[in-house]
Image (tube, rainbow, N blue to C red; front, side, top):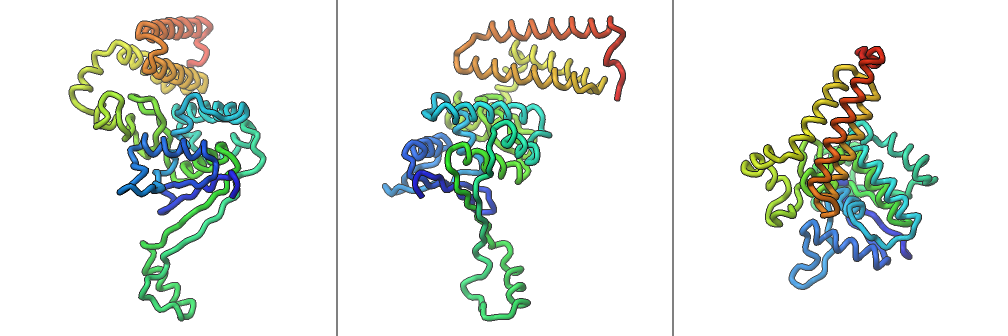
Length: 304
């Protein structure tokens, strides 16, 4: 296999494994197992774990100081920018848009080679020396046991991330960024917090920690959260009333910048006062811009 990566999806494509001779990628995978609290040994025997779909790709995208060449690092940055926009606008969590993105923006000319196969369509006791009609009856009887497995041969880590995100969108997942740890996770509902260990309490997930009643009460009095909610609600109401695409773009851009500021705050790069300064300035600019629009004849005041 050389240093290609075999990316395999198991159990109706809900779980993933990878095989490669690339020592650096193997080391990242082991770190991902530890991050997601999967043991790499059981009774002293090394095991290869199955991670939930998308977890390895998102772990890499959340990592900093990766030891890849400039071209791969540049593509990782573009993918992160795309996912940030997916979080703001769920309509972008779409394979048609994603395939256009990897073709035109990532400049990938070929989609990684894949293969699909099934197993367990007969039980051990089934008589398979039958005609087609009876074989099909057996397959229908065993339909709950049939497993679909997909294999992709990836030439590098970008290929792996591309096919992983493609499968994520194929299965109807939305990409979110946890409002507590600011790392990517998947779901099909409106959860704001991920199911992985929180940095405040490693024995509780971000979801468990942040939906705790005492934390919710504390968050209500948080000046940053309060000011963010006030501004985002103002922009959202403006967009819903006027129905202008430009207003939606303003809302999306503000939310994206806020998420970036909060991630830097969590990492200790900036202070709370700097986030509050950003929010105060944003609030002032949005209100002044709205006044100018009204003065210019109510441009954009017409509903769709």
